[in-house]
Amino acid sequence: MYRQAAKISDLALRAHLIVHTACAVFGLTSGLGEPKDVTVDISLISGSALGATLALASAVSWGGADFSGGLGVKGANAALVVAVSQAAGLLCLIAMLLMVDEPLPSSSALAWGVGAGLGVGLGNYCLYSALAIGKMGINAPVAAIVSSTLVTLLAIWHDGLPAPVQIGGFALAAVAIWLMTTSDGETKGLGLAFGAGLAFTAYLYCSKHATADGIFWPLIAGRFVALFVFTGIALRSRADFSSVSSTSVRYMLAAGVLDAIANILFVFATRYTRMDEATFLSSLYPGITVLCAWLILSERVSRRQGVGIAVALLAIPLIALH
Image 1 (cartoon, helix red, strand yellow):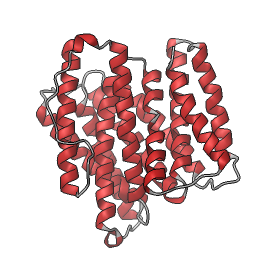
Image 2 (cartoon, one colour; image 1 turned 60 degrees about the vertical axis):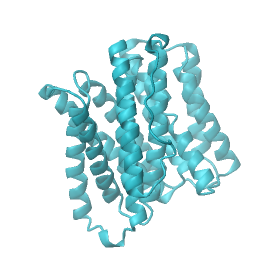
Image 3 (cartoon, helix red, strand yellow; image 1 turned 90 degrees about the vertical axis):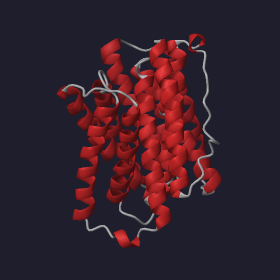
Image 4 (tube, helix red, strand yellow; image 1 turned 120 degrees about the vertical axis):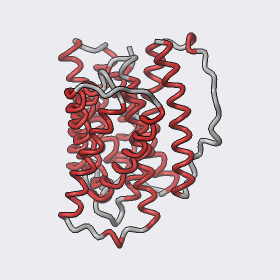
């Protein structure tokens, strides 16, 4: 365990370097400060606490990725946004692979990786399309609740019933969806948000199997296939590349890098805690997306929708508690 945790600490530092460099290239501010070498006493960190920390870190990264992708898709083709972000994520994963000594995994792991890549690609396509026509503060939480609930049902089937407090979290999640979807406020893109949740469920399930004996190779395989598929979709839909601004491209690239880092953090999290717990903690990412939309875009929602968002964000951590 200590060896794996030390490896995570090293990868975190390298991921920090990649984000810092990428932001400098794209003209963005990472907000992370200068990378510093940090020594952590791994013996003080329990496995479950480490898993929870990694899952929460993936939530922050995914929240930033969705916000960036949502800005990049404004006025652009969703398939093009997915293709560009997948390309950026692929380069990020390849850079990390070159820093570690990971042997080529089995063909089964690569196949699961392809399934995971198609799942996350389709999920991002649906989510970005939903964010382009609807509000970030509504559609992002709906996608998170759908995926986290379905993954938990799979975990119940495999590992048994959850704790009573988690069942209470499921009830709150249902109330949150009702509040957000039956409000008098703007609710465009909810169907796409539900579709994104279904696709993300497939991604989470496949990635769990794909990374059993490897991390980077399966994720790279998935990204490569997703890049090929969505580039083809973008070309077939005759996306107008010339109309995309340089600022939108920067947001697309940032979304891809953050998404790739979130994937790695989530994979490590599932090695230290139950998959459903890691899923619900990482599903806190809409809170980051909503916060960014409120602070940067001054996005407003109705009072009822605001209550629904608050209940959704409360339901997610409750389901992760024991």
